[in-house]
Image (tube, rainbow over all chains, first blue to last red; front, side):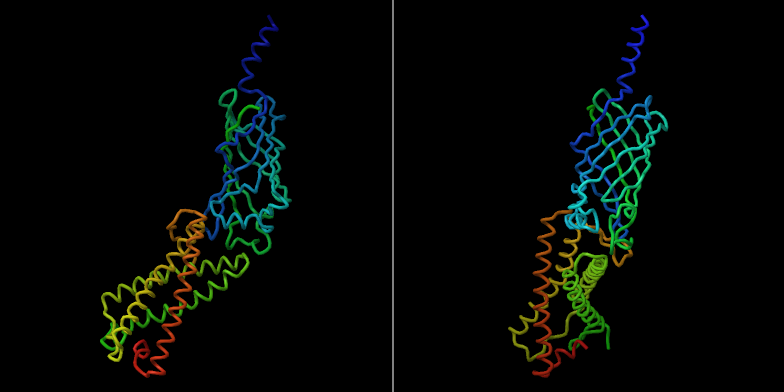
Length: 184
Length: 178
């Protein structure tokens, strides 16, 4: 009877807080950002990325997020601008085609809301960032993540040399993530 | 000196509009040739901003000029001009007005299709007139270049003709504009 009760309780809890991995869906998804040119905002996206999340509120210390972004998939809806961003003063595609984010700690703020700290690496620069994450498991196969945070492009050597000032291209970049995941 | 045109002379308003546009067009031509041959840099983008802002200003000024021309008839052609010469003058002027309208509009389309901002001298944003599109941008760039080269050729002929009338034929054509 005791064994049966343990089994039943674990079965009841497992769909909600299973510690399985979730993999980002690739269809119709993007990482969005907003930057500024001549003090006018423009939006851009990264079209290709892979993100794996494992969050279990009952074992939060073992939860993690691992993401790799193909920076060459950047699209700012401007051919000229996208070409410029590929150059060595900006993302330097030929040497640094990928950016990565790996969490180092995740803590619970409240139900479905977490504080994520991790290392973001773009080009050859690593920086620890912390941002709030809304993580909702919708059903056994689907989950959704929402996050927003600000970056300073100087922290990652994005826009160096003559572009190191913000007269033309602003320093602040707002990143918005709204991403669907499927169970791995 | 009157503000409006008389039967024999261009008025002050017409002369100001003419010479302002003459100087601005020469400046824009020089700036355009210089900046397109520069490598990408903040300085190049600053020059683009000035070029785009002056272009919009010229579009506004040529609109005023056309309205002024319509409500304020031009001086009579010189009596020494033949019918064909008068026709050439009218066609040349119409063509220049058309180019002075179309050139800034084609530039505006380039900027809009490239999805770049248009901050008028850094003061306020001017809206786009075309959706972002590489093909539209390329068509507009070709049109801008062809129109500018055409205007350059007509301005050269226009200037040469004015100097010819002044120094060779020694008539009042150039003096009317001073």
